[in-house]
Structure formats: structure tokens, C-alpha cells
Length: 500
Image (tube, rainbow, N blue to C red):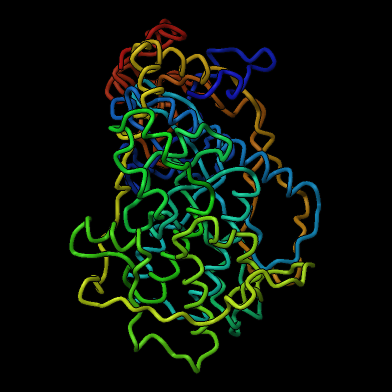
């Protein structure tokens, strides 16, 4: 479980009753959902800015609340690092800056039923839907810049000690554009400018690279995207401890493998290792056995040849020989998007097209269904050492722990530069830091009794929450209908034990 020090500490003399008041209203429609959460559009009633609100059901994740601590901690660290980079004024001439393409956390708090994360708002849909709708993406205009953009995001995570562990098309979303396309882009650039809108999201399975070896032996992710070294960890919790230790922990190179799978999916419209059965799929992954249709292999097309070589390098079953995200930035397939002062070539004679000997009779060369992480939240933390810890801690103790940590407040210093520095090759970037909230409007780490997701942007705040932030007392009937409690009961229960 995350340490107490990893959680924010209370600052100043913030009045607790003021802190628990809801600062958001939500729309009823969902932007998306997962195994244990839903995502809705919300608005900060102080700033009128729009965000995405991820509501994680406590009931669904009972006994696994430490996972939510880990996700919040990672997102908070990444958001802090993003702000440091933006405010430093450092110049970066890469077309895509990795920290621009990682989901930003704005706020987080707890209700009686949910842990709530407030993040930047993106458009409806995701990269999976775009690929399925198009059949496949154009290699030069879309697949290549999209791959370069995601590579920059993965490189940023790895440089900051984070491995995502669930890179896939369903977790790549598109930021809402906040800047107009440049005249150059409107006339037609040499690649699709929506590549600047890509955001790598869903850090529910992400972890630190300096985590325990047990954590880096968890078989988590989505089967179609799993690297061989993750696949070898399947069923590890059922092994004796001595046998578990014989399985080597994996590292950040699993994200490189997954990026290769995603690039392949963008180019072809189907998955490289999928077969009729999971057992056959696992066998192909462990052997690095993927199929390339002759119709997609054009050795006279330089871009095509470099693409397949890029894929071949990502699919090296030997993790120690798989290129790092840093090295892949220099690969000729994506090198034009990165400016690197080091002219050395990290690949040597490996820059050549590798022919696959796989037979198409085994592989499913068809549109894949939307994937769900094959190893879900219920399987995490099942190693003997962590299971022992969980058996010694009751559910009430876990909930009290997260309540106490969530009550402690820390301003995230969400500063927006007065004049964002941009260079010419990033004119089409949509990146913008989270807006500056008014004093006292954040709920970071607080416990809120009242943010029921039953309002919309046309509902007066006084009707959407029991205790409104502008001290308007709602009618008792409306309050009871929406929240199941009146304002007096809210005040009485502040800071007390809560029913689940």
C-alpha cells in the first residue's frame, strides 16, 4: 500500500465544512466507463471550466483501495512534473513534447460511494474507434505521427520512473482543441495535425519502476498487448514463493512492446498476435510470431520498410535487446519528429526489413473487439506478501486510511503561463495547463458528502448539492430527492463515520 507520506498534507486553516462542499456539477451522460468506474463531463462552478470526472465505485474496489491511492499519486506526480517543465521555460524543438500528451490530474476527492478524479476534458471517442471506423490509418499521414506522439509520451513517463502497463488504442483519447489550426495546417501539412491532440490516459494499472519486484511481476494489462515477459507472470500468485522469485521482474520495455502492437493495429486494422483462442495468442506472443500480409509489405516503399522494421524491433521477445523509448526516437521511421543532438545510430545493421515466417492460418486477421484489461483490478496485489498484509487489515481500517489521507489538502499550483512559449513546429498543439482555480475552490484530498452525479449545467447549484458553495440553502424537498439527506444532517455528519 502506498505510504502515508505519499499523500497530501493539510495546509493553512481551511475550514472543514467549507472544504467538503461540492465544487462541481455533472452531466448525466457518460463519456465512458470501465470495469469499476464511469467518466462524466463536469464543470467547476467557480471557474466555469469543464473537466472530465472519473467516479470510481468503492463497492467495486473494496479491498483494493490502495490501487486508487497509487493512481492518484502517479497522476499527481506527473501533473506536478508537467507544470515544472512548462514553467521552466526550457526550449524543446521536438514536434511532440511527451508531457503534453499525458493526462493531467486537476482535482480529487471522496464521496460516500466514490473516489473521484477530476482530469482534463477530451473529446468523445478514442483511437480504437477511429481505427475501426477508418478500417486502418494512412501510414505517412496518421500512423507514423501518431506513433511518434505516443512514443514521446511513453518516453516522458519512463524518464520519470513510470511504466504505464496498459498502452492500447482504447486508452488513447483526443484532447479538445483549444487553439485554431494554423494556416499551414488548414492548407494541408504533410501529416494529420490531430496527432497533436493525442492523450495517453487511464493510469489505473501504471506503477513506479522502483516498485517492489512483486509489483513488477503482476500479470496485468490487455492480452493482445502483453509483452512476453508479462505473459510469463501469468498465474504467478499460485506458485510457491521460491518459484515466484525465479521469474524475472519486467521493466519499462513492456510499454515499447505495446506501442509496437498499437502501431501494427493502426497500420493494418487488426492485431498482430490475436488467434482464435487465448492459449494460441499467448503462444504467438511468447514466440514473437506475428503475420505480415504480402499485400502490406512493399519493400520498394521506404516508409513501409521502415515501419515493418520499427515493428520488428518492438517485438523482440528478449526484453534486454528491445530498444528503449529513448533509442526508438532515433529510428528512421519517426526520427523526423524528434530533434536530438546525439547523431549516433543505436540500431546499426538492425535497420532492415525482417520477413515473418508465420502462417495466416493461425492468426485472426479481422477487426478486433474493444478490449478489456485481461487481468483486472481483482487480480492485482495477489502475491503472498501483499495478501498477508491485506488479511491483517480489515476493510474498515482500509477505508479509514483512505479517508484520512483524502481529507488532507494540498494545492497543486495549477498555474497557467501568461504567455505560453511555442515554437513554429508546435503551432498546432492543443496543450494547455489546467486553469488557475480561485482561492478555496479546490477539493484536493477532501471528503465531500454531496456531489451527486444527478445534475446538469442548467441545474442551479443550489438544487444540485445539499450544501452549495455560495451558501444558498436549497429547498428541503429538492435536497432530499437528490442527495437523500438535508443540509442539517450534512453538517452533523461532517467528519463522522460514513455508511458505504
